[in-house]
Amino acid sequence: MRTTISLLLALGAFQTAHAGLILSGSDVIGGAGFGAIPRILTIQATGNGSTESGCNSWNGSQMVVGPSACSNAANAGGNEPNPHGFPKFSSPTLGSLGFNNALQVGIIFDATEPGNNSGNPLTMDSLILKFYSSTGTLLLSEALDNPPLVFNQTVVGNGKTDFLFVLDQQGINDVTSMIFSNPGFGTDHIALESTMSAVHGGPESFLAMGSLGHNTTTTATPEPATFVLIGAGLLGFGSLRRKVVN
Image 1 (cartoon, one colour):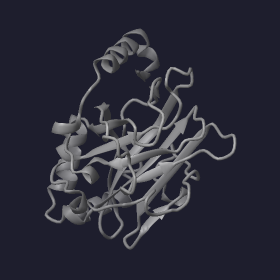
Image 2 (cartoon, helix red, strand yellow):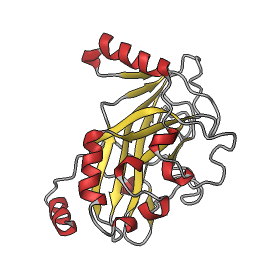
Image 3 (tube, rainbow, N blue to C red):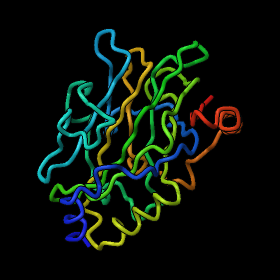
């Protein structure tokens, strides 16, 4: 299987990420926030910039952070704040996260932007979850479904409230067949890349849900108002293909 995947990569078959990441709901991490828990990716606009973009990857021996780690043209990178390691960046293995199947794969997004009814919505233009072999081969990537995703309301502060992204059914199928069906999946690494716009400084951070010992069956707590607004947005602006979170 891995030989076949490597050949497909060489032929350019995986240049475009599958659209398989969807917003599941909110996941509040108590009062501790992220603290010293290693994050997968942190991005922060510099100067008066209104866009922030960041990437990391695994090259077979170490994590790579910055523009060279971006696998998709949707993300330019370059807004990864120091230090380029613990606690702001990591590329953990599936085994270290306790991920045993695709249903457990989740990414927590912590927005520090002032979206609290301030008239300053935060827009997620891209989010890509990447799976690397232990030797640094990009095996599979799953991208945000139907971007951009607009957050009209957040709770300001690092770790005070968070949004949970999981795999949709196609993403579950992809990750199951191409990652978890291989006996050595525990040594595979994950990494992320993302671009946000309409930002006001940040930082915005992403955490692998397994880092908290959670799974999607216990932490996904959708807010009814969120899905009402999403539904209304899709009905009213179907042609624009925009989703709104409130």
